[in-house]
Every structure is written in structure tokens, then in C-alpha cells.
Image (cartoon, rainbow, N blue to C red):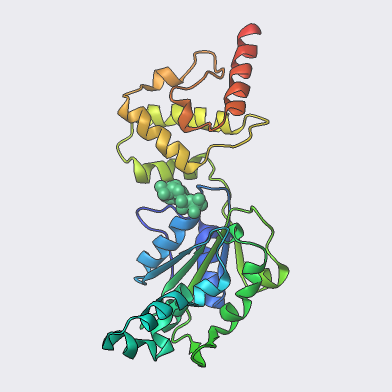
Length: 284
Ligand SMILES: Nc1ncnc2c1ncn2[C@@H]1O[C@H](COP(=O)(O)OP(=O)(O)O)[C@@H](O)[C@H]1O
Ligand SMILES: [Mg+2]
């Protein structure tokens, strides 16, 4: 069981190594990296490549650890208790009918090993990762309402992603294998673009990549454009039939690229860019 990338996903050797290391250690793989560097897609691709089902848990600011285990649906039970038909009164007697299984429960009781993605763990409050330590470590938890112990039949392959919005607690980090997806260099980026646009003209790609990295390297940018934004932009360039010449300036200087709204997402960055172009013109 080794992950080697796929035809839709470009995995660098160190990323493949990390996936396989986490699988060997049977520890969660904690993946950090800028937004749009393929963290979520990695879990999807690993699941597909290894032929394992994927269970996804997208974390929001309001998500609590308990929701991943189970929730007790008291409202439905109350409603059933107020109905007088036989079926409802039968159902209301067994509390198990009102226990809603969470993603971890489903992963623990699946018939075959699954890939479990806990996506954007840094969105939740600081207690969230701590509250999951025991479950992830021991692969078991108690259901207090029914006095059951739910224990994993198979250890899931756990992926945890973070955009680095918050620090994670040390006790949590100790239990993970860590990998940082570095922003792709130009060669890797070229392979990624090839996966998505196999028929893109070489000169357009070269010109677009140069412009893209020029924009990214602009000092003082508030939000650097990411892989997915480059892909969006390329899609537009193709759709609008924009040629490589439009992107290239004769004197190697920076010009405002067409459809820049795909790359720069706030007015300060656009202004910064315009200023730079303006200054260069005046220095001719
Ligand atoms: N290594 C890669 N190979 C192929 N496509 C990629 C890669 N990295 C990013 N992408 C593209 O960028 C998009 C965003 O990736 P995603 O996994 O959502 O990023 P993240 O979860 O890190 O924010 C993907 O849908 C895919 O189209
Ligand atoms: Mg993501």
C-alpha cells in the first residue's frame, strides 16, 4: 500500500514520503500549506489511489469535537413522545434511535479501512484538537447515553489539514506526522498545469507562469495568488483566446496582466501593482 501520486494529482517525492510515513506509523498526517496548494485534494487522491472510501469532515468555527463522534437528537425524541401513533411511541422507548452517528463513528465502524479527512482543523476553537486526542490515539470512545464503547474495527488513515490560521496544541502535534506543502516551484507548477490543461500552448504557459511568479514575488502583497488561482486564470486566458504576446512585454518589465482579478483579490494589491508598473514607466 504505497501512494505514488496520480494522473490528476502531482505529488512531490517528499509529499509521497510523508503520506507513506504516516501510514506506517499509523498516525494522522497533519498537512499545512498556503490555501490552494492541494491539501484537501491530497486526501481525495490518496483514497482513490489506494481504493479506500473517503469520509470528510469539514471543520467550521462552530464545530465541536463531539459532533464528530455522535449527537443526541433530543428534539426528535421530544416530538415523537408527543405523537400518539404506535410507531412513534415504540421508537421513543429506545434512546438509540436518537443517537446520530458522527464522521469518526462511521470511520471506526466501516467494514473496510477508510481515509478520514479532518479538513481545516484550524477553523475551530483551540479546544477542538485537544478534545479529539484520546479518540485519535486510542481509536475508541464512549457513548454515555447507551453505555456503549465504540472501538475502531480498522484504523482509518487520517489526514488533518490546516491553513495555519491558529497554532495547534503541542499534545496534538506530538501525535501527528507533519508535512508542509511548500509552494510549488516553476517546474512542479508546470506539471500541475499540464494535468489540468494538457493541450495548453507552450508559449502561453511560459508567459503566464512568468507573469504569475512576478505577481507572487511582488514585495508587500497582502494575498499571494495560489495554484488554484493560477488555474482559474489560465482557464480564462484560454476562454478569451489571449495570446502569449499580450502577456509578454518587450523589455522584460512588469505590466498589468489581463483578467488580473483572477489573481489579485483585494484593491490594495491591485493598487500596489499599478504603482509598480507606473514607476517602471517613469524610469525609462
Ligand atoms: N499537486 C496538485 N496537482 C494537481 N492539482 C492541484 C495540485 N495542487 C493544487 N491543485 C489544484 O488546486 C485546487 C485547490 O486545491 P485544494 O486541495 O482545494 O487546496 P487546499 O485544500 O490546500 O486549499 C485543486 O482543486 C486542484 O485543481
Ligand atoms: Mg482545502
